[in-house]
Image 1 (cartoon, rainbow, N blue to C red):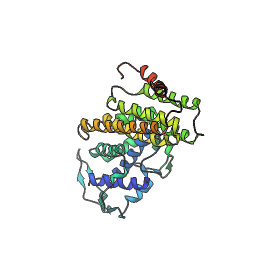
Image 2 (cartoon, helix red, strand yellow; image 1 turned 135 degrees about the vertical axis):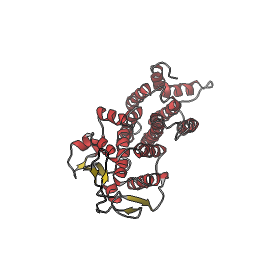
Image 3 (cartoon, rainbow, N blue to C red; image 1 turned 120 degrees about the vertical axis):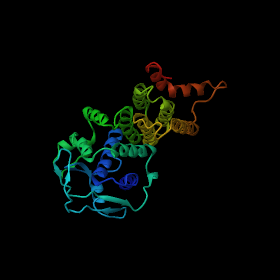
Image 4 (spheres, rainbow, N blue to C red; image 1 turned 45 degrees about the vertical axis):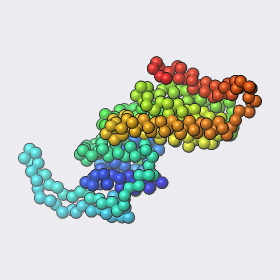
Length: 341
């Protein structure tokens, strides 16, 4: 799947910028993977990166952009020297090479990308569009993943994890890779894998430990910046707590779904895509649908796992069971900064 995402990301870039050259194409994939790795702990498109003079290059992308293939017609630059042109200041500049030119042989299949991934592709491409290639290359030279290796060496993917100073530099350069979504996704995804692999059912102590993590996430939720998604996030939290008790093997899928939705909304808000790309009404509708989906997930779990205690005539036992499932989250909400619902 990752190879298919790489191919379709390249097709997407060529479709939306038919003048894009090879260096920019390779940097497009690099920055998409760099941001995605810092939010999710893995890359979206690439698997092997090589240190090159103009910045990191994904190995498969390097091959795909070098010559015509099943996906692109590639016009390879010639080595003929062009006529000299006068540069600013009176000096002469000699253009030795033409640019690579690309024509897609098929349309990009965007259905293989989540909404979050599509927004990421769009935002990186827009960021690059009016920047000179040399400037984009210079930005990549700031990171340890380029500084600490020599040309031709493989770059271990763990070097894609930026430190605080590097993340700040990336933000100052105009790209977004930090925020609550990074804290949430890099915490909940490995935790969910661990939970799914544990002996089921989880004991009360293990559930309480995981719920402490969930409580910290709620306390750290960025209000009012992401208030538009807050109800959907709490619905996800309810569904996840129910999953812990009744079917922990589903925790990784639910965690991934929560990360996708959160990263999508966060990226739209952080990169100021409203209203240029996504209208506020559209974003609100997405959040409402997401909230309904997580509520449905919680309700299905409750339906399939009725309380084992007998119900009394007043329904008080049922109410107590429901309260017990939510009390940890409610306590976290009550301790959150003022202004939270």
